Image 1: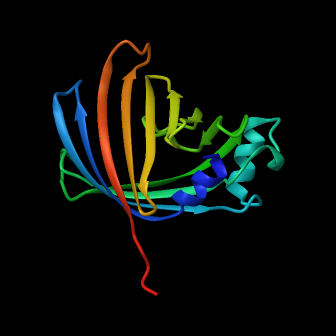
Image 2: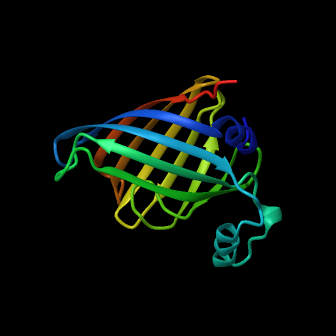
Length: 179
């Protein structure tokens, strides 16, 4: 597996069911999400802004940039459990080689700031993503169990990596269009 194959396999509309265990707050959370992943043009203005912010990056350095959008409903929303959290981010893969590289994200997974992550693929095709934020470290794993079903797990650690704050597991099913 390489990053272009991974993005191609990830493109589409997904329904996600995530269970998260917050060790810090001793809470368990169920989240239902709609996730959309679509490739974007290398001329996309938001992508061009990200490349300029990085300074020495050009379009020839990146592969398969994409836009990810999500809308999530959680049973742990303090005010209204029917509130929907939504957002979007641009993700820019920069391969070092066929099996590893860097991902730039306009918004991070664990903290709502721009993020720079390192990724690699395991021998079985599992995508592993590691991100060091200001307050935490996140490790995500995504693997496909079929063409239209994938799993995702994450571990959120303290910024020193000495304690685990949260773990989660998601099963995600691709929404198929009727032909």
